[in-house]
Image (tube, rainbow, N blue to C red; front, side, top):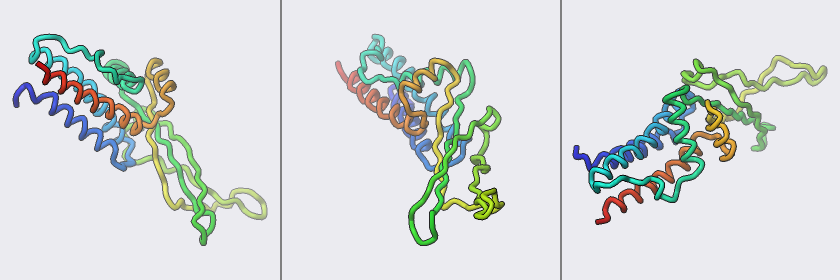
Length: 203
């Protein structure tokens, strides 16, 4: 492999990691590991750009000249620092269960909750299964012991920041969904990669 191809290889690794993260997996462990890999590769890409550019052009690469950086990319930079020096990236699982109102109609009601995982639970292959809908006794109004199965379940995986800086950035962004955050970050890094290639091609 030639040195000039390293950035392209890392970008493709990043694209593959994003595709894996965007899958419909409901495993907290798989999503957390895919997200951590994406975070790591997002910073690895910029590191190899600096190295490759300085070797090819014999002058330093100035990442700040790219005008597309935003709060999301700043968050990913902070997440990698936290993951390397503080504690591993952690996620929360937001679960929504949908129940049909009647056997004849298509109308549904939804119940949702967020599972808080400890560090050990970050290795769970499946979400917890203790959110259940129990029917009330129509005469007493008390729990009847009869449970209703949902017609479907949906999961979102939310970032649980481990540092105050990451927490402040996430609050500013306003969306903790790791897949949405990764989508926004990947869009910026794709633009950055194209910008890098244009700069490298200039005489």
